[in-house]
Image (cartoon, rainbow, N blue to C red):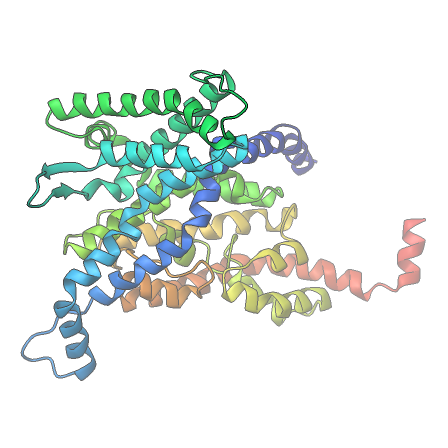
Length: 439
């Protein structure tokens, strides 16, 4: 009865809120953008991996390691530059993407808002060191994950102000019918463009006079908040929240607009630090979540799939066999809906707390240097042990994931056996008896 009350409360209060979050135009644009830039993120991870050659010395005799180290040293500039304009230019891609998806929401032509957003971003994020005929030197440090906040602000402000001015016909000039529609439209955009670009120019002048950039100023002011977002309590809160949503039938896409900037931003920062030979500072990243927290998908169901394959229940055995391969690749839906785990009070505790346990153990292992921190991601669908190794280049990460799978299975086991006994009894009951009982 208590569980039914919780379910009713979730359906009455939380489900409508989650639906509103998933449809909110800004969060939806952010979510769609992070999904769209995945190819850039994956490609940008390749040079980071190639540059992460193990250290060698005069005593090293392994030909592969020597060749890898030699390749990384010879091509250091190329690898660094490829990473710098892909994975480490994440904020620029996000700025362009959010502007595009917001324009789609408003049915506006996205070209000019995207151009204005890009100009504003470059003006307020890049730091010109030397400009002249003989060459230009610009500091691009902050267009990695540290620039995500300013990228979101610029893209949203640009599109919202552009759309508002267009809706209210600000600056629109009446032209004769003989004037081509394209030329008339260009004149109509002059005032909005001047207003938006003038605003960004004034901001650049103000922060340049302070001998800084807007992004550096904001990042410094919000540094405590960014540090808190990478803390263990916040990681636990987000893991629990996502799994509670899943358990009650709410896809985690409702939270993607919040999780994406934190996870991907931290990954971009770690990748930049890795390429620069600096210690990695962030833990709560996309590969941390994908390869260590949700092993087998939401609910860390890979371990459960192994248990179900040997179940005495025909239903569980079938679902386990069907869901094993997808769970290897991080797809948990066959097990979540086939068991079912969703809205199943028997599995409430293990579904939420296996992933939470994984997150806590992994966070502490990375924090204390037992396992390397992540700096690359190849695919959400990559098997966790492989992804864990490639994202850290640390063999101990593979051991950790395998241990976590075993521990997840131990946590699922008693609840699985309770549910299995109930199903075995139901499956052993003749259909006629079931029909009599239901009359």
